[in-house]
Amino acid sequence: MSRQITAPRGTRDLLPPETEAWGHVEATARDLARRYAFERIEIPLFERVELFARGLGESSDAVEKEMFRVSGARGSTEDGAEWALRPEPTAGIVRAYLEHGMHVRPGPLRLTLIGPMFRYDRPQAGRYRQFSQWDVEVLGDRGPAIDAELIELASRFYREVGLSGVVARVNSIGDAVCRPVYRQALVDHFTPHVERLSDDSQRRLALNPLRVLDDKELDPELAAGAPRSVDHLCDDCREHFHRVRALLDALAVPYEVDHRLVRGLDYYTRTAFEFVVEGREGQQQALGGGGRYDGLAEILGGRATPGIGFGVGLDRTLIALEEQGVAPPAAGPLVAVVGFEDDQADRLRVAATLREAGLAVRPDGTSRKLGKQLEAASKAGASWAAVVGEELREGRIGLKDLATGEQETVAVEEAAKRIGG
Ligand code: HAM
View 1 (cartoon, rainbow, N blue to C red):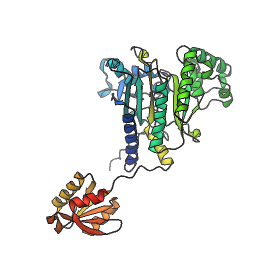
View 2: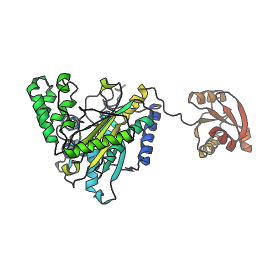
View 3: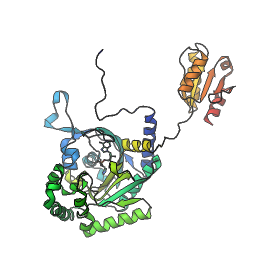
View 4: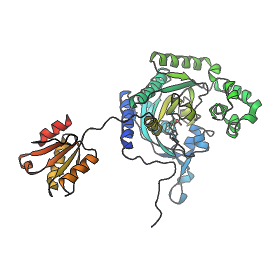
């Protein structure tokens, strides 16, 4: 026998019944996108490496360590282009916005997508090489009202899928005016203690000192004494952050200001936020995150366009739901159609009528004994059986309640009504 082929490391198959919970999470996201007036956008799963290198920043983990490169047949690419599977969708959405001149549409634009992302990281619990995000982006809005609206939207998402204890962590990391001063303050703080920093942080201290704050191995003493971005904001950024917080208070959104929150991608300016389950800090696994990226369009060679958005990790949301023991809402009743002989045509006809009435129907296609068919129906989760027999000539079937075992003979249409409640 030849060796059995398994899925690549860092991927996971979504199997029933987990797909039920997944469907519920996705449906919640789509419904919220509708209620918050977002329009759907779809972009390719792979883009030029340059888009990510420029957009997310050379020093981001996503670019530096986790780029999932792809090439054509036998390693070829066109015109020397280098491609990578998208580690996130924001850079691609802004690229599409610029490429298609979407600024001429009445703005601000509210765009959303759900789909897979790829990061070639070391896989572990809650960290996959292929994972899915619900992403929302707003282009052409300086805020601060939209900042609060998006944080409220993501908070509502976690609540509506059924999670409890999810809090937003927010921070402001300044803009092109005040960031350089803050960067320097961090360099001045960490440089005398450089030997106490991890290898990663030592490298980042030169490239992007904000990311040193993100280092899980950072000495708590050094972290506690580190300068805070909020103390270095310029007047405009300070006022912006103040108003975002006032709006969150007005909306009663639970949040905490987290002075170490800097986010892992370089495009962020001003408002940055993440969502975590309270009391689960040890794991440091954000359920989602986002922020403002007012400079990204220009970095990508386009006209200056303010932007803000977030990405919700659907896999981690599902894991959190499982941990909290939240089951997806029960699906509607399942009906099995069973019969006595080789009456497959009758069974399929009855199934079709019940389905027209909107019911979920599973006809038994075998010629096994009725008892066996009913047994299989119960095992498959059916709560009703439509028993097809002689009386079908008068348009009637046996309707059996599989929980109680009671059965009566009713017209097919009547059966549909009873099952549908
Ligand atoms: P991010 O924080 O890199 O932000 O990812 C958002 C969420 O995706 C994370 O909070 C996490 O739940 C999930 N996620 C990230 N990496 C993995 C992984 N390897 N396995 C499983 N889940 C993962 C962004 O991607 C930004 N584009 C968000 C954004 C949109 N900012 C502005 N607009």
